[in-house]
Each structure stands twice: as structure tokens, then as C-alpha cells.
Amino acid sequence: MEFEIFTWGSCRFGEVKILYPEAVNEEKLHALTRRSGRVELSFAVLEVENSDSSKNIKRKVKILPKTEIIVRYYGKASCSKSFDEIYLIKINGEVEELSSSIKQEITEVEEGKYKKEYLVRFLEYNGKKIEISREELKREVIPEKLEVIITTKDGKTIISGDTYQIRSLLKTLKFKWDGRQRVWYREGNDYGEIQLRLEGEGIKVIVDTSQEKVVS
Image (cartoon, rainbow, N blue to C red; front, side):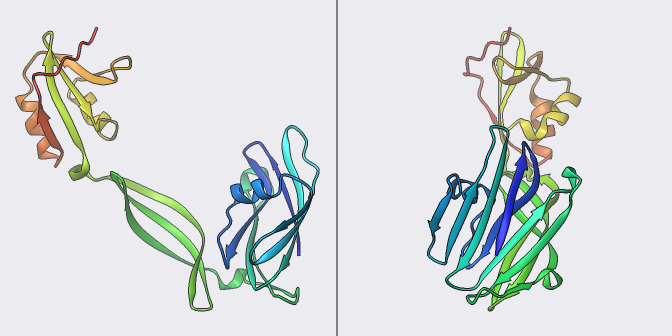
């Protein structure tokens, strides 16, 4: 089965992702198809016709299966050409569209300092759950995973550490951002109330008055 990969900047008119039996994402497929010719994979042969210009990716990729393969072929709506198709390519070359078999579910996972909620699209094949795509629906900071350091210097209270996730809170506490030192600061050494407020949010606070952070 032949697919056309055609992108222009961030706009993807046609994109290919191999889902099964091994995951090969778009970026890896781009790397494999930089030159015209044959690319040998453990589960397929790719016949590539590359006609890129300096401004886009324009390639034709024919997939010759050695075993059953599931492929996602899609184009983004932002390119005024929206489609999303799932194909099963059989070892004899026959093609079956699986788009009607797609399921979806909402799942929550912890990633670093965030709890994220995703809409996951998937299908089940040969007893395996094969993920097609995931869309982030929302994210929430996990306060218990944040750690900030409070110090004082030159009549200022300074906060560093995991501050990106609580920048709105720091602004409400009258702190300002120093991009050169990459810390938050405000006038005065009265950090007791600030410490209590942050700890009340579940954030770990370390008070270190020995630090030498100068904010101009």
C-alpha cells in the first residue's frame, strides 16, 4: 500500500505512523525515508520516492509487509484537509480499513509534577491494546511534588526552586520575577506568612537564610 507524506512547516497534509507490530512514529519515519530507495525493517520493506523541496517534505512510501501491519494515515484539520484513517495491511497485500473499530477512553496519569487527563484513542487487535493518539484535556499541578527555597538578602525575600507551576500564586503574594537571577522576590524579610501560605497549599518549603542571591 502506498502513502504520500506531504508536510509544509507545521502543517501536515499527509502523515504516516506505523502502530503495529512495532511503533514507528512520524519523526522516525521521516528519518528512515530521507532518500529514495528501499528501507529494510524487521516487519516490512519501505519503497521510498523522495522529491523534497527545501521548504517541505514530499515523499511517497510504499509498504510491503512481511507480517500484518497497522498504519495510521492522517492530515491535520489546520491544513484545511482533515482525515484520519487506520489500515490493516495483510501479508498478502490485502488492505482492511479499521477506522470503525476505534475506541476511546479518558485516562489520568502523573507526569513529573503534573496530573494530566488524556483522551486516548485506541483499537484492540490480536489481544493487544494499540494506542492511536492521545489528546491532553487538562493538567493539574501536584503540590506535594513541588519544592521551593525561601531565602533573604539585601532586605528582600527571595523564592527559587519549583516556582513555574505556582507563578500565579506568587504574583498574588506581590512577588516579582527576576529573569537574570531566575528567582522571585519582594521587598522585606517577613517570609513567615509566605511560608505558611505555601505549606498550606501542600508545597514543601525550605528556608535557607545562608544563600547568597543578589537581586538588583
